[in-house]
Image (cartoon, rainbow over all chains, first blue to last red; front, side, top):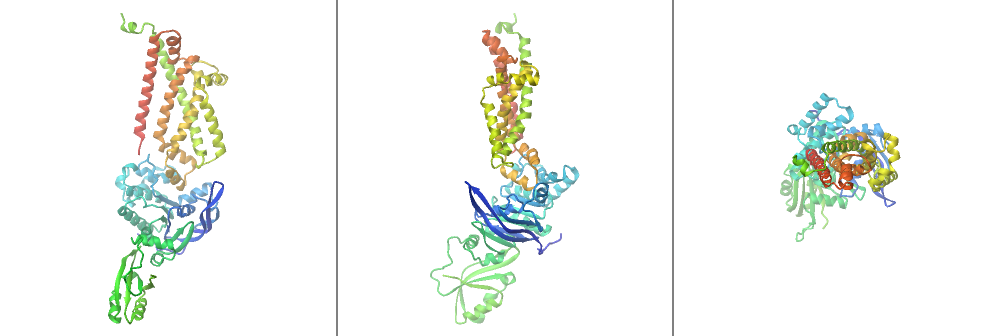
Length: 344
Length: 224
């Protein structure tokens, strides 16, 4: 299979797109004007609490929600006011999966996957059947083709949802809290499938979630939404390792399972430093070399070594002291490791 | 002596048989046209309601009002009010054909309301998913709403059919024929309790058969 690296071709662009709802005759903003470009082949995450506007933002892409102001561009074309056949053609090129799967309960797995094919190409038998079995193979459900959704587990239902969303070979896949109703193990396997599809088909994926862990595992870039505003936007590594906004910090803390526990470490003397390793530096014996060279002492207070998508990273919080502390910090920086002094 | 004759001294069995046929014809005919009119009306109500695919609050209010008015008029009065219309459509005002017009106009709004309720039971997410796949409204109705609501629609049809059995019996009073007419003419007005017993028993059997048939179909098409 070919591997498609992200290329610099904007697939989705919001130009000051915003959305307000009329509630009791008053306009209530759900999404403040947002400017954003999503490139071909990237996995773009939108994270926010419920009510932050992420669901609205996702639905602007396939115009299930129309922007109140501003514009939406897909593949460089202004689609903000697309109607009728044009709108349906646009939507057939954008797959979507949902938190609660939204499968047709009255149809079998195979019929569910065939559904979008039949919407757009009539009922030509052979082509549809071949495509359906190809898709069911892709998501690993070939042997369940004739079951009804009620007979499947949550993870299997979402795989049917994914097969259905990919049926018309879309360029974009929208994921609406696609793993929020699944247990951790199933979540991992569905995310793996999404990452695999992204790599093999070069599909652009936009997903919304309230879990930083989902972002960390599959996304290239992330936008953090808070009360209808994009408060932080960047590569997942940057946002995850150096969160700026309070909301982002909370999400990162949740992912690190240190909710409600500050980084203060009472009873520890001296300055605290947070070291962020990325890529190959993560696995090099840097710290022990620096300690040997400079004679500084350190106390490891907390740490995590993991992966952001395919890149290993480590983040350690240390208390360091010694005469050649500055020298030690300089050496660590020189090795490409970020150092932040932790506020106490 | 024939034991049937001892038990039911007054009954003319061929007449009962004819009344059964008449009742079934009225029921079948009126149910058919009730569905033909009520299903589209129910879909229309569903689509135009607030927050739905083709929300049109004013149109919905008008449709809803008409449906409510027709449902409020007691059936026996509706039959009399509709005599001119019945004559215009069928050329007669009594008999089986004459009864079908008021039966349909009485039952179609009722059925439409049940259809609307059944369609509301369809998961909104499934409708949204079909929209996201680029389905037209016609495709959403025919391929999503109706199949997904199938069990509910069958249940609605059953309830309507049973209600129509009651209406046909009432139609008997004004000369529509059928089992209801026999019960009224001979059983009630003619003081022949055996007629009353037999006709009512047959109507009970009819309702039981319709209900269990409906229930069986509902459970067959439930996929939840």
